[in-house]
Amino acid sequence: MNWSIVGAIFRKELKTYFGSPMAYIVLAVFLIITGWFFSLNLFKENMAHMRSLFDILPFLLVVFAPAVSMRLIAEERKSGTMELLVTMPVRDFEIVLGKWLAAFILYAVGLAATIVYVISIFSLGKPEFGPIFAGYIGLLLLGGTYMAIGVLGSSLSENQIIAFIVSFMISAIFAILVFSAMIMPPPLAELIQYLSTTYHFQSIARGVIDTRNVVYYLSLIFFSLLLASHAMGQRKFL
Amino acid sequence: MISIENLKKYYGDFPAVDDISFTVQSGEILGFLGPNGAGKTTTMKVITGYYPPTAGRVTVKGKDVVADSLETRQMIGYLPESTPLYLDLTVSEYLHYIAELRQIPEGEHAERIDRITTLTGLTDRMQQPLGQLSKGYRQRVGLAQAMVHDPDILILDEPTIGLDPNQIVEIRSLIREIGREKTVILSTHILPEVQATCDRVVIINEGRIVADGTPDELQSRFEGQAVIDLQVYGDGSDDTEPFNQVHGVVNVERMPDPEPNVHRMQIMAEQGTDPRGELFRLCVRKEWTLLGMTRKIQSLEDIFQQLTRSDAAHQQREEDAA
Image (tube, rainbow over all chains, first blue to last red; front, side, top):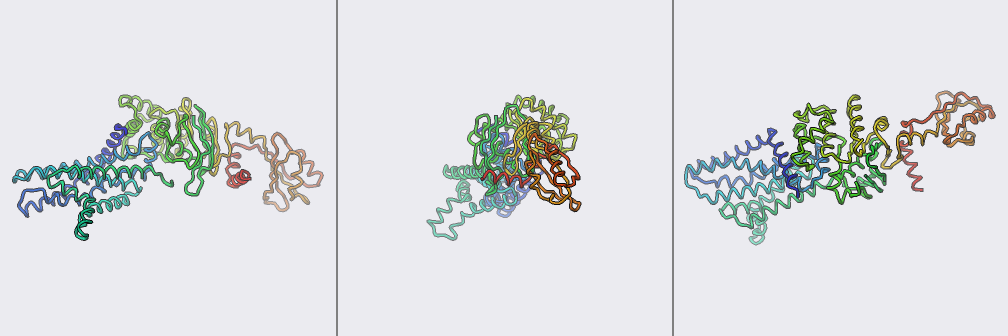
């Protein structure tokens, strides 16, 4: 693994994101939606907490992450620049990792902007700091995971719409497995719940960052990126 | 420098490249010539490490392009056919990005890029986005990109396609310039390009090599083989057999002629012989009227056409099978 190459790809992708209106539009939409959910419950319940946002964000990310990441590899395939990129002395995994990192940072910027909400509730009341901090760590991990699934989807097609749909479907399945308790008997449901991205976020958002949750997310990120680099390595007509 | 041994590349069942072998010497400019779809691009994609070969082996300076791919990719500069570029980047940003991917130390970027953009005539376009550049300038950026890391080997897939005549001349002389120090493989389906720039030609058709040599060699190899176009009138002159018996004749083919009762023959003569006199005497003996007889020396263009006609390829394949 050559980190200077990962860095070069990361910087180029970030430049592409912020050099076009896309990043700003996506971030604006992200903030409008989160702001809406945040303020809605703040005034209705008249309570200073982040719960309402932490409840909705895991599902919002299922749409947001694929929208950000769908172009990462698909676009290079479509425009033919992929051919140049992979004939450089660069490993496929370095490409995938650099691209994921750029999408992750874009998301982290959006998430950082929501700290405004945290500041506002601290000025209104005395919320507990622990769960909010843990919640943000959880959101970073969760978003990073969906971005990795997004990169995987993007590596499977040269069509960005297909890439979006594939990543959305995979992410959505991981997200809604948490509801398995509603339709399954307890022992099986517990097992399946454990596979859900939302489930691990919920346990982090309670205020305890357990190693198991972190390992779950990191391994899902790694596995998705590994699959993506393999898919990218498969050229057409192989 | 580059060695290709029994390379095969199938797309599904379709053989795009079917068992070709050749080597490229250090410092050579090799023209890879063939009609569209002959397998030129596929071969180049295998050398550059884009496609793995179906069978066979390609080595660059003794390193296998599959097993030691990272090393061989570092030695090669590649200009793909469509010159794909990131249209949102400026020329300068793009070349810096490529330099980073090529792992050129940060401190050397400015100097390298400066040198390469001077060579390709891009110095006054550095801050322009690639999307705004004309086809000719994009091609120069593609070439610059392929040479940023000063590779020993350049692989250029149709480097002059889509350029106007002035640009073609410029790019060709640029390739000549570069080729003094580097090994270059360039593909083309334009014949004069090969004569203008290449030291050696490999002609490929339907995935197979049909000729390999210097442009002069190819010309002289087929030059001796003159074609005689003969028009004759008279009883029994529609039969190819009497002509075939003439000393020095290799092959006789009947060609259509617009005039009624006039028979037209295309006669291939053996190298170094000129059977025109014999043919004339044959006509006199048979009391046929000789209406015309011309001898044509084959140009490289004719050789190319003859070698790459698809029926010729099938014939070759059958001969190989037999």
